[in-house]
Figure 1 (tube, rainbow, N blue to C red):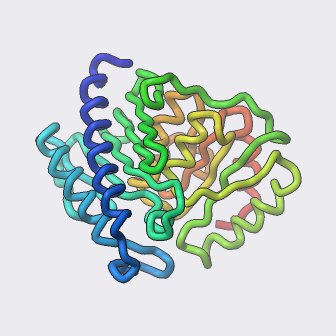
Figure 2: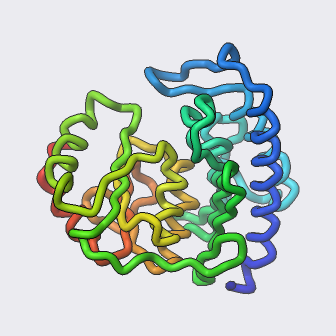
Length: 264
């Protein structure tokens, strides 16, 4: 691993694991009455907020000069060059229903460059991490994307909360790929969809109308595992947008070609 970031990455892994332990403990006594609705079908609970408070406090001690982009908005940024991008509980709907996966996602961003990415999946106790130029790892073991072609690919085509706008897109993607690829899945966590591409468990993933906190850490992990990440237009300058296509590289063009036929 890149020596410049190796110690920092390990510290972030420890923070993500601590937040994961908190989430795991709270899940044992969790009640549906404590769920709040942010938007239609988009939920939050005290657990999301408690996890974010824990992570932000620890990251401030680790790197005081950095600002924050966080899903629950408990910390912000001004003119800092370094930004922590934090999803304290990616897959909240899964968490509420006690349905794996759900994860903690933490990335360090400088301008448009992702320097560090850590995703901790709580149910399976899997910590994915990467640093720019330093490779990608799962619990310390190197990761690499798959070598599947499109006809045998396992794709993850997610369903974002913006259902009215995304229905034509997902209909087109399913019409294009259903019956023409190995199979299609939906997992409910953008961060874990990306990590599963990096691990070669999935061969491709596409989703739009998502936040930076959803995809930032996982995108670096895919790239460092040898995969390709772009936005829906095919640009590799995706960090400021809200759409992601991530694949093993072999099938990237297949997904982008399908998306080019969508009205977005």
